Image 1 (cartoon, rainbow, N blue to C red):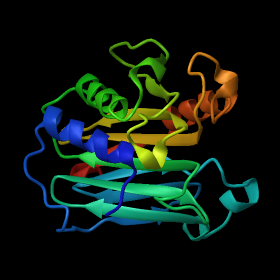
Image 2: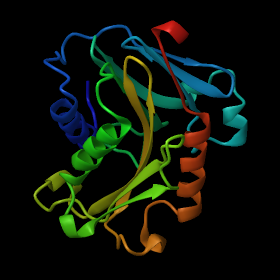
Image 3: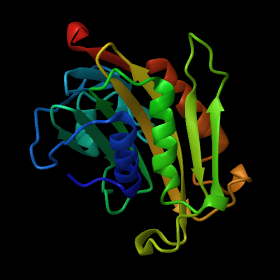
Length: 226
């Protein structure tokens, strides 16, 4: 299934760090995306993720009984891992300004810190090193794993399709006894100064509000809790 360049590089890093083992990108298992009131759910790879609706929708659209019909989405699933990606109506993997996604992996041997580090490594690869930045939304404690923001002010010039562009990403992480998951959103636009939030493709207030919403409303269940 098609994925953004960032999703591909993050997946590659996760394969290395989390030791996924060999997975076939041609053998698709069951993946179910549903609306559950004011949320979406994604069931695949022995897990169910409940996540808030896309924030680009209007209040009226979020009240619809068919919110899925108002966004574009694609899925991939096999026995080891699965993901779903959402795009605004009329956008796609080849032409988007924002994308919202969830990924789950059946590997309970690694910590959320490992999973976060793999995400940072994956997102760093397509970016100019001098244009990257990473920060957390809060202090990590034994009871709280904060949301992560990754800022890429400019992609590498060698990536022709992305030259002159940059992006901001926010993600939250969850873990069960059998797997780990990340739910994340990306905003893309012209290349910008990573040290100046006023130049970013998403304003700071929107980014912080979305980080809080993802942190507060994302839930992950394994087979016992599905």
